[in-house]
Image (cartoon, rainbow, N blue to C red; front, side, top):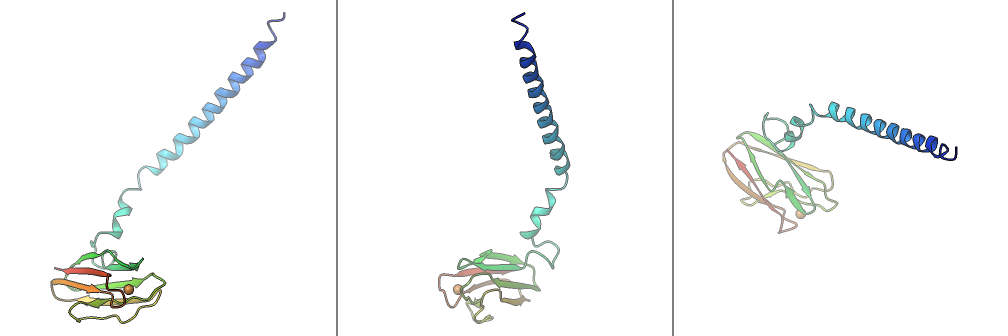
Length: 136
Ligand SMILES: [Cu+2]
């Protein structure tokens, strides 16, 4: 009669553990199945120039640098620069063919490239800021 006492407690522990494991297993498997199909194709749009009007013609000025530092666009593309720094910057062609003048935070500058070639540009305020637009 002494030995029958521990059994119900042990059984209750095992049942509780089994329920916890079962709940854990079923809740983690169902969300994984629903997220799988749609995630892959959306990520590439920011980097690729495909489409001609959307993602491949923007340059961000941030942390005293142009990003991307090398941008390749088709002839006829209008490239837009956006200054996201708290400091002012310029977008100035090395050959003087375009110049944004000083852009303060949040301001944009657009330049249409109608001839093929490699166009190097810089910030006239910070001489270390250099970048390239390749038009082809
Ligand atoms: Cu600058």
